Amino acid sequence: MKKILLVLVSFWSSFIFSQELKIEEPEFVGQIFYVDSNNKSFDLEFQTCAVKTGQSTGRLLTGIGKIKARLIVKGKESSTIIKKTESITFIYNNGDNLIVPTKVVRLLQFEVDGNNRQYIISNVSNVSGQSTSMDLNYIKYQAKKFGNGSYLIVLNNLPVGEYAFFLGEKASNDAYLFSVVE
Image (cartoon, rainbow, N blue to C red; front, side, top):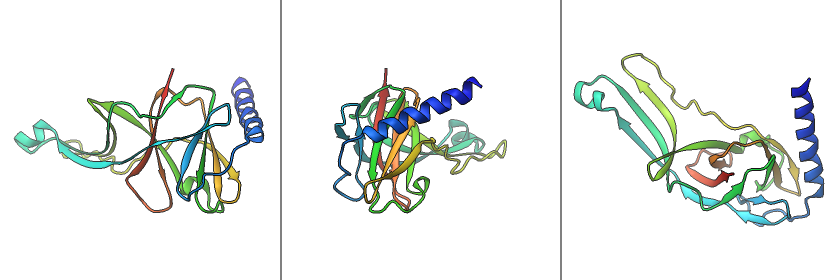
């Protein structure tokens, strides 16, 4: 019962916030921005991800081990910093808002590794036979139509971390990045 109440309160608060939103759609198709509680918009950091593959030391020496493929972006933290709140709002201009949002807006949480952020997209072992190729764990969000061609995207209770939006119907390594901090 407590969980249902929390979901209803979260949905209701995001609904009320979206009704109070007094901001224009992004000007350009493909543009996404963060909207703060003062109805100010902020662009997200943009980078094109590199795709790198690597073998474990064991695989290099003996031929037995793992191969990983990763999406990598430079920097430990995004230049777009968002304070952790109950809900975080974005607006994405897709050109039209007739498509199911999950087909054009995908969000992944990256991990910090050294001086970069990464997301493992493939992990194959020739010992165990395990494979996690393209097993992407997209983060769920609430979305609704906004304006003539945009989506209002609300993320609830997003943990502290590094995130990247991948936008559009076609596969792309273009990432729109942000950090959630305490």
